Image 1 (cartoon, rainbow, N blue to C red):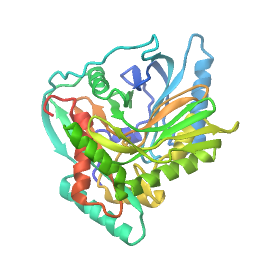
Image 2 (cartoon, rainbow, N blue to C red):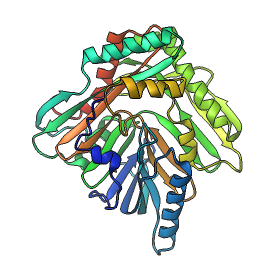
Image 3 (cartoon, helix red, strand yellow):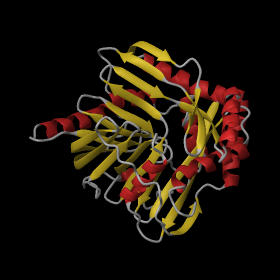
Length: 392
């Protein structure tokens, strides 16, 4: 298996004894912007060890609460493979500003200043991706899998180190409805992106999830997009894929709820590069329900970014995909000391390390999938990040 985190091998073994070079983490939605400053506690316990992870988080919040003048928050990311270290920090202070309601109405600049690209290197080329899809289809035909999500990766090498804040601004400008984020990973790296998919939002007793599955690339023509949207709604293959995800998430959230509602039919969600089938799952939590992060971890990995059955699909990915995903298709977001927060699925994202940006994109493979069409889908999804540079 290729490890595109060769310099970032520290990313997996790195125990954050040192605090990150970037002292600010950011998370934006269509409704608010949240910025955290002054990281004081790094949390590395793998999410697979839930007891240790929760103990580290509890201890960090308690330590900050013992100080005066703090407004602590947990922000960061969990990797796809939860046996790997988490990348979370508790920040001493944070500010949250609403858009529109007398809060933050700042319009982010979507005009890109040129960033010189030295080279673009494919980690997974088209032929290797096709082989993985063909292998997945054989497993599906044999009844071992119902669905598996396979991805490709590439990296960009810049001539000079780009400004993380400027990249975040460009992402926000081009993706105003997405969950846009930039969170430090270690003293040299930051994880940033513009995810369209909400894994879990918790506000007191109310929880919401917005699963996406079943996708088609957008065009530059509104009439063509309308026709594509209609076709996507009628697509047996895409609706089949979508139902996997919705049923799985609803089943997991229902364990913690006294009430649950699920969209009867999906609608089409449009991003700047893709059209997705989208559903909403809403619940009202029991009094003994866990916090936002723990409910989100109950959902992770969803069939939307892994497959069905989950354990078999995850093993297939780890054995056949050809590289280590790292934080891609994990979860990214925040949680406050009361257990409320928002966690997005970490897609349309990249890991920035000085002059290098690793980027990723995947597609769901089910009965009827075509390797070429799935490759085209991944290429379109990559454009969310690639479009912020002048060459694209």
